[in-house]
Every structure is written in C-alpha cells, then in structure tokens.
Image (cartoon, rainbow, N blue to C red; front, side):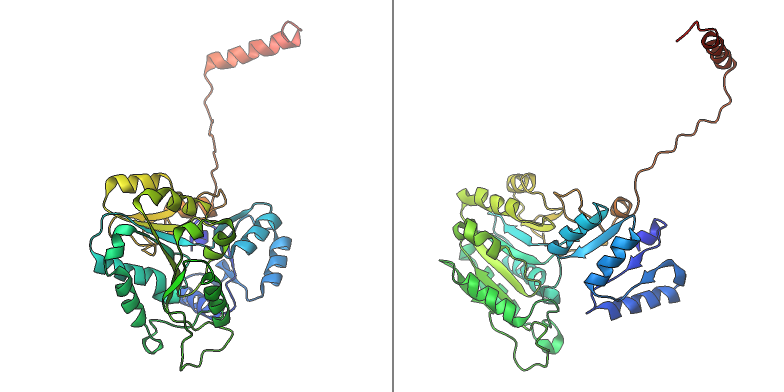
Length: 349
C-alpha cells in the first residue's frame, strides 16, 4: 500500500506458504476499488523471483525476510533495496520492580502470541537481579502453559521444524549454567505436518557471562521464528555487559526497556540503537506499528513501515525542482548585453 500511495506500480511476491492469504487481500482491495492493473502479483520460488528482479531491474525493492537473502539482494540489486530483515528483539527489565503480574503477561504476549512468528517477538529477556525474588518466571510459566492448540493460542510454526527447535534447545543446554525454565517439548495429539513446527512455548536460561563468550554468542542470539526465548539475569554492576550484548546483535529491530527509572532509561536508550524501542513500565516489543515507525536502525539500508515518513523513505526519494520563470529585470538584461559585447571584442575573458 505504501508503494501505491507514492504512485508506484509494485510487483508483489510473498512466501508460498501464505500466498493464498495475500491473494485474498488483493481481491478485497479490488472489491474496494483498487484498479486491477495497479498491482502485479506473482507466485514463484525464490530463485525465479531473483531472476525476475535481476532482469527487470526495479527502481526499489522492499524485502522482509532472512538476513541471508537480504545480503544477497543488496549485492544483486546494487544497493537499490530497503531491508526489514530478521529481528532478534530484546527486553531489559530495570531495577525498579513493580506490576509483576502485568509485566509477566506482556512478556508472554511478546514471546508467544502468534506462536512467536513475528519479527518483533521477544527473543531475549534481560532480567535485573531485583526481579529474581518475585514470581515473574513462575507467572510466565503459568501463562505459557495455558496456551493450547484447541483455541489457537499456540499453533503451527511455518518456517522452523520441531526437530530444528529441539536441536537448538539441546545445543543451548550444553552451555554451562544453562537450564530449561519451561516448555522444551513438542506438542502432542495433533495433525500438523512434519514440515512445520509444533512446539510448546519454551524459555531457556543462559548466564549473561556465557552469552558474551565468543563461542556462544552466535548460538544464543540465533533467531528462532517460533515460540522460543532466552532468559538471563544481570547484577547492578553488569549493565555494561547487557548493553554490549545488545550492541553485538546483528539485527537492531525492536526492543523494550521496562522501567520507570528515568536515569536507567536514559542510560539504556542512549547506548542502544534498535529502530523501534518501547520504554517505560508498560514497554513491550510487539506494539501497534500502524501508529508509529516500525523498522530497524543502524543500517542505511533499513526500511520503515507504518508512517508517512517511513513510506516516503522507502517508496519515494527527495527531488528538488527550482522554478525561475521571470520576468527578468531590465538592468539585468542590459548587464548581460554588455557582457556579450565585451566578449565579442575580446575585452573580457
């Protein structure tokens, strides 16, 4: 829609697993008055779409998906691309403990709503030591265990198999000090095909010191597009370690700083770069992107969605037209005639 608002004719391609949904969306737009010739819709695999892009040479491509494909497109299209790629969303709980039940509910929604299949999902929770004496984790566990297939509060994972998620959990549990907080088992009594994932909402604790180790960091910060999160804890004097971890993450998309401590917020917000960051005791990683900018930061290729500014950034560009029509002042005309005469007789170089 942003492309259309700016007067472009877009070619739309979505993942084949969900293309039927987008087709129905387009049919709804046609019903509401969208001229059928204004949008081209293609069903294809990635290789075919890449060939189309290479031959058609579009003026702009907006890509949402994996970082691997994003980097390939950036090279193939010679930079004519905006990226809203993988997001490893983090949340930091500050030292001022309050509203534990509410914070637990938001954590559950951020991590496990839509079975965690959203680029704004809470992938890592940094918990200040002051929260350790509360019932936060047990409340999160209770909320996660209420989710079931029957009411679709948990469901199939489209892009990560159960086997892959189980392998990732087992690899994490090899890290010293790590432990399974809850979940960690496949869903039972279902008919979900094996090409999809079917996993309980899961949380694995990994010590902050271990997360920062070179041989662990890539594993711990691997995005699992499903109902999964990492939980860790930090002491008052370990905030620098937390911020170092946030800085080293690859995709700076969404983040949340759960605190009403203004000095703490100032410190964290001033030393982090995520493009869409919520701050305050009600902070979450998944909010309402239709009402504000949503997109990564720290990369000039980063795309935005959701606001006029974002739409103009991606689907238009700055253009300056300087109108200088006249009339010309008479003395300016005389001056120009004088210059012409001087040049004619070689009196001016």
